[in-house]
Image 1 (cartoon, rainbow, N blue to C red):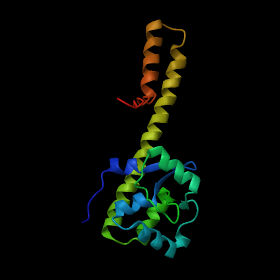
Image 2: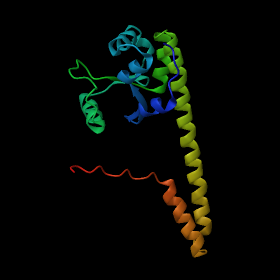
Image 3: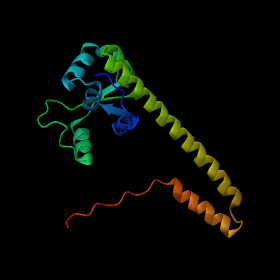
Image 4: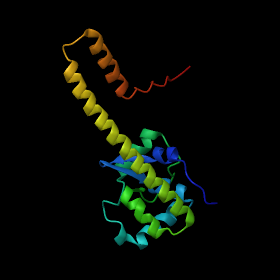
Amino acid sequence: MNQMIPSEIIEKKIFLLRGLKVILSNDLAELYQVEPRALVQAVKRNIERFPADFMFQLTDEEFLNLKSQFVISSWGGLRRSSPYAFTEQGIAMLSSVLKSQQAVLVNIEIIRTFVRLRQILSSHKDLARKFEELEKRVKGHDHHIQSLVEAIRQLMNPPVPPKRRIGF
């Protein structure tokens, strides 16, 4: 069944590894509705299309770190090898390797999600820069203005997630 994937689902599958935003092969296989081994096999048959900045295999340490960070036991019991990580360019290249209609639809949505995340990040940086300029201008002025600036600064910082209590 060909279906669009909500971008919120895709966003949750994007990780930052080695300074790159990536999606793991297991997650891509789930989105494309193929077996993970079939996805990796298709990539290996076309390995010349996937240079190191498009795709790389996680080290055992990276894999264990991710697995423990997210406490995801479903990331494979017995595995022969660590999953692969695909950058945005690698994901775009997958559409030329996986030729199903589902792969095309998923790729379109993944690329849109990456673009949207870049736009959000860019606008946030621009907003932060403008706010810093405003902060410099009001420094030393009215106490109420400085309080307002401090309140806005706190709103710009991401909230600290509450710690989960252990026990009863």
